[in-house]
Image (cartoon, rainbow, N blue to C red; front, side, top):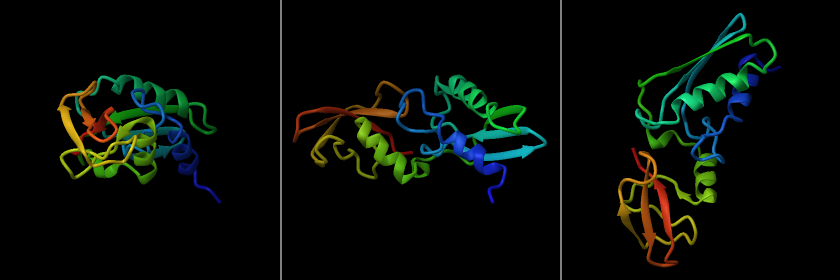
Length: 152
């Protein structure tokens, strides 16, 4: 028998990151805690970066999705900074989806493995990519530029 929290977590799995639409907020490790009391759901999210411009959109997407669930009549989304988000929170599925999307998952190495050919022969082009959580790399093997999630 499923608890009431199970459908909520399953629903959150369908809320995708607006900047990386193949990866859910659950797979990115943003969901910190979910509580429910008499139809009121409170979702605590830990942003990947404090200044992320997509936070308002993520909060609205969570509210829009969860209000569709049976027995949910109010949704509250709070962004919490403790414990802080780290790249270790990305699930194995999330790492694979990042790679398939063309973004190298975070790596302990200075340069992430190329998501296209898997080579470790890359170089940093710019530490500041299109968003605060990504850098731009260049693969010397397949000669493709690629983005990579920063290790935090």
